[in-house]
Length: 459
Image 1 (cartoon, rainbow, N blue to C red):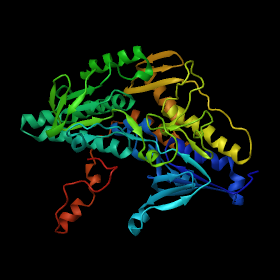
Image 2 (tube, rainbow, N blue to C red):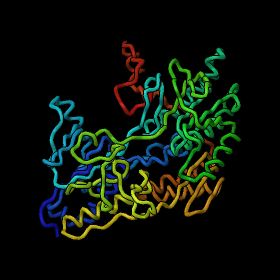
Image 3 (cartoon, one colour):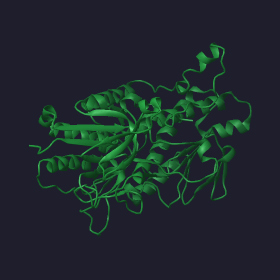
Image 4 (cartoon, rainbow, N blue to C red):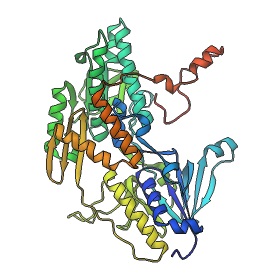
């Protein structure tokens, strides 16, 4: 039994936020029915994005709506607030929340009181002060960015097909990806595969006309799959005429020209930035302890060190890896740990409410899988190394088992089955990003050339 009424505030609706709230509403079903517990989830989006499927969504293998999980449907016993936490005062047990309503009212953020706090805001793209990056760069962390990038790539092929200017054509068919981690390599592999297939429908664009460039600052890519599989990935990408440049940095992309540290210059209309992430800015607006990298310092029980009733996991938390041989090692901020940490975190909140002992988070890293396009992939799982079709199949099987809800599993599986029977759908719906432009023009107005004020929209 819960000893007293508890208000649980979950900040973030990603892996940790959704899975924690989902497990809490299952474990505390009776307490919720009796009104002894209240769970509030604050998230900027009404859905959770399953990010490993973003590359396939960008390539058109999966519908965008099947990459996201609607939170209100899944968390039917929780109160879901669409907004963002801008500050947390854990000493006073309050969080400052801004929502769409507070913006309309013009009253500023509202203060929300809580008894237990779960901080899981995730991470944001880590950018550098590179000239032109803010103006021309494209991110790859959200489903909006993934679909925007797909539209953008197809539109560049349309431009190249219709222009008579060789300089414009060359820039349109040059695609630069910065960052050799999972996001960059998988996005590049899937989109290059999609563009190569789409070229058959253009009378004057051939796959060899396109330049695909991967820029990585370190001496290897995909470090999670091991050095051997990383070298194989480089060889495989280069076999597909993808220019992989290791130990190279992007120094400028001003005036639509990508300038690399090795002196190379590429006129391009596409610069995709996937060079790492950093903790969410809200962590700096709290009175909770953080480590040198800006992540919350946590205990093996997933509570914030030196505090009570404050919990964290995922990208926002520096959780000790108790399975590591060397002391001081932390769990990697990836989905594999985040989903498992959410389960332990929710259980520990229940244990805390009931006055029971807490359990320690313990999980040995199982390995990683990555897709390089249709029927191509690499994997290093439990010491076994796979490549090609077996690795690609394992990638799909693993993520199908991990995507939340049976509804999403069935829909994704059905789409994969249909894609094996029918041809790819190659179409750009870029006008979705400016849906009122045609009406404004018809009504006598002048449609804006700038994208609407939406930080999640593609440029």
